Length: 370
Image (cartoon, rainbow, N blue to C red; front, side, top):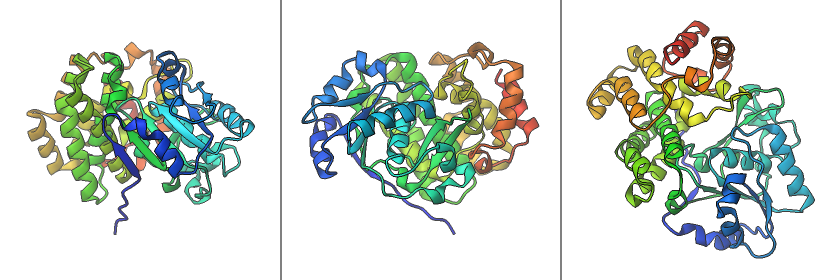
């Protein structure tokens, strides 16, 4: 048997963000905390969103590239001190995940580690938490429609806090907010979205709707990503990439795999602060090769889709859109790899890879991606 649930309310389209006051009223939110980052403050987008809210705005702009429990606690303190009654996540996956964790703490006590999936936290997370509106400004993680917040806990591990109760109340997906995204970030976040579609499709759980959604997302991402990188004002490409991102996240409740089992501990390396989507892109060819022997006809479907071997197609795409040549170019060392391979075995995505990997397998995939 399979439990298949889809998912939260999504308002999609150009200009939809202007309806923010309507949605706040619907959720009875009068004083939201906007969780975002300094880059969006500097770009003027935070002021634009705050200007849609009646009354003074409350903003936390300290979201790190890989959100930490420390930052979550800082934002949570502001939420309480300012007597907020809801959360708006504005930004990429990091800001949205941080906002989800802040929301969690409106009804749960810290620390966050107790709510992670690997600690059995699903049963500890209830729905008595404040409303949340997610407004993505990138097309990558799909966190706006996902059940997870991935946070570096106080212990230094990058872990998933996963529950249906973590889904945002409403997701406002307005492609217009991505028009100004730089080419490099468009490429990296786009590869994140496509990796979700690929890993979901390969995962062995029985969930035909997830497979179909993942393949539609992959189709849109494959045809649009290079266009969006080349011309950030290409409306059709930006629309397709935002759909690719949300479909990847809608589908990955089926399960992800070895790419994410590796990128989570890699992303927890504080001295490097590596971008999640870039890591996914670099690791995907090696993981595709590792999974080939067990995914059967799905490899043939992907080969027909790409017109060549999937690992070769993704490697070529990475090169065309300017992804790093390998992990070494990103500062990853052999010493780090040994630690990452061990931690990948403990990641919640490890068990849903179609071919169960050993520590040696993970080390080999890292070496291939060097």
